[in-house]
Amino acid sequence: MLADSDTRWKWGALTAHRLVPDASGAASGRRLDGFLLRGRATPTARQLTEVGVRADALREVTGVEFVRAMDRERYDVIVLSLVGGAVQAMLHGLRHAWQGAARRPVVVTGYVGVVYEKLADGLLLRHGADVVLANSRHDADRFRDVYTGVGADADSVVECALPFLGGARYDEKARQGRKYTGGTVVFAVQPSVPDNRADRTYLLRRAVDHARRHPDREVVVKLRSKPGEHTTHIEELPYQKLIAKFGDDLPANFRLAYGNMGEVLDTADLLVTVSSTAALESLHRSIPTAILTDLGVREALGNHHFLGSGCLASWDQLDAGHLPEPNAEWLSRQGVAADGPYETWFDAARERVAELAAAETLPPLAPFYTPVTAPGYLPGRLARYGFAPDGSPRPGAGAEDQAQVGALRRVVRNTMREAARGAYRHGVQRVAPVIRRMGEL
Image 1 (cartoon, rainbow, N blue to C red):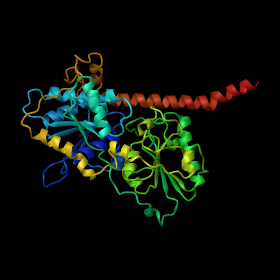
Image 2: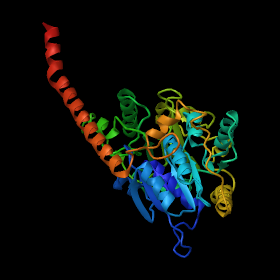
Image 3: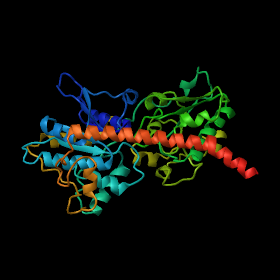
Image 4: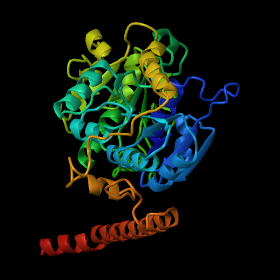
């Protein structure tokens, strides 16, 4: 399994275990080998520990190194849990590496959560995998429409569910005996939504105000990463730094928290977020869930995905005691809280993968994008990961060269970032006061 961020590691590893249930069973001889794609979002050891999903082996690689390993080592199934451009690069790289091979592994990919932006772009970059997993009936219908709309094969789309749903169903009685009798409100933040200081500070202030208004409730802000760590999306304005501006005058029933989302939800009585996939985890457990409308219902925020869910609400409404009631039909189409045991939702995907793995031969991988169909787009996507337009490794894209280039880029990036911070501090602390004084003359 190849992943490029902490969230995608979680989805990919859990998906691998769902598709091959005995993947970690010693008796069967099956194992899960994990590969981390080297890049800006490569997860740290702390992030991997927090996710809580382990592999039998784990190493960091470049795209070219991964393809060479897949050509050299024998695997039954490969799960690509990557951003769309990286999936496309690996598909072309693997296609080239497996030319003339009698047998090859089954290649699986998909999305780590809610698909609310770049639907066509992301899907077509994933086309060519043997199986493209859709996390709900809603997504499966949309995925097939995109593929058939461009004349591409849509048979690879298979409906399943998010692999990290589950956990104990919500029981209101569980809060009895807690320190805060009014329950626990969890605000699940996101790295890039909203994307500006004013809106993020506003949401944080409303969470603090909610704690002040309800001293019988505990308000927990669930953080995604520590400053300096990267996730699936870049977090330019960490809430940890924004809360420092509030000073020491914070209510005792308010706190920030890291940790595994499933464990945090074990203590939640209300989940609040803008558009995080955590909302689906919460809804699956029947935990009251609110999708914030304070900043509007907009595509840029992703909360438009929850139209019809019955979960849209504002902090004002939550302050007044409102608890959203989810729409059962919407939940069913989104693959949460549906009828039937959760495990059966992966049956179709397991059967498809098993059927393909048992086949004597599989046809070559056939992505929709080729040098003929997308000559102005594909070469750039492949070059970013060290591949030529035909899927072969580019000259100079060896492991050592890639590592040196990556290290140099990190040094330059960090140097420029520190220089920019220094210039900003100098401007705020030295230049701005002088300009204000001059304006007063």
